[in-house]
Amino acid sequence: DAGVIQSPRHEVTEMGQEVTLRCKPISGHNSLFWYRQTMMRGLELLIYFNNNVPIDDSGMPEDRFSAKMPNASFSTLKIQPSEPRDSAVYFCASTMGRTNSPLHFGNGTRLTVT
Amino acid sequence: GEDVEQSLFLSVREGDSSVINCTYTDSSSTYLYWYKQEPGAGLQLLTYIFSNMDMKQDQRLTVLLNKKDKHLSLRIADTQTGDSAIYFCAESKQSSYKLIFGSGTRLLVRP
Image 1: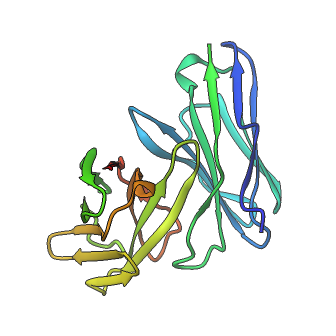
Image 2: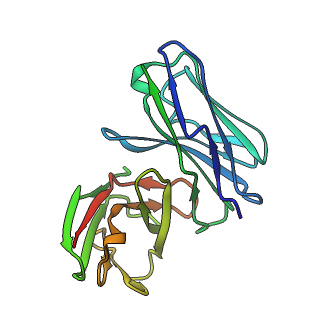
């Protein structure tokens, strides 16, 4: 089992540029989550999908953020345009979607916006 | 409301026991979790407890739950330097897959 795979591991971009973060969940998992981690705010849930459908996107900070899950094995989180305050580690996690199924996290993408 | 709080830092000597504490506010929480995050990595599930239990033991880990006080603790026996990491407490409700995380407790194990 390869685990949750995120790419890239690190991303450095200039303010105003578009950033796309990618995630491949564990095969067979039907729920996928995007989290953001910063020193100031800790871990924040941005959005989660169940069976490829967005269920709760109330954590998405603003319209500059969008997420898609075109199929069960791939999701993207896009920031357009990016701003320095978006600098954080972005984690993707997946789960079987049953009660008590643990979340499996990827290793994250460290985003730096200059 | 949903709020999970933890102390920020704990330092212990190798071989001692570590106790990491967590409080939560949502009395309808069904499952409570402990995750470990090592530098540069994602969060790894250590253990979890269902809200109708008051204790769970798994090798060196003991989880205690006081539902009345909404207090959760993680005890690590014979703490090793490899246990140095950030430990997150999280809660969820049965009707939701959404986890609410605490701010994390950084555990430093001194040789």
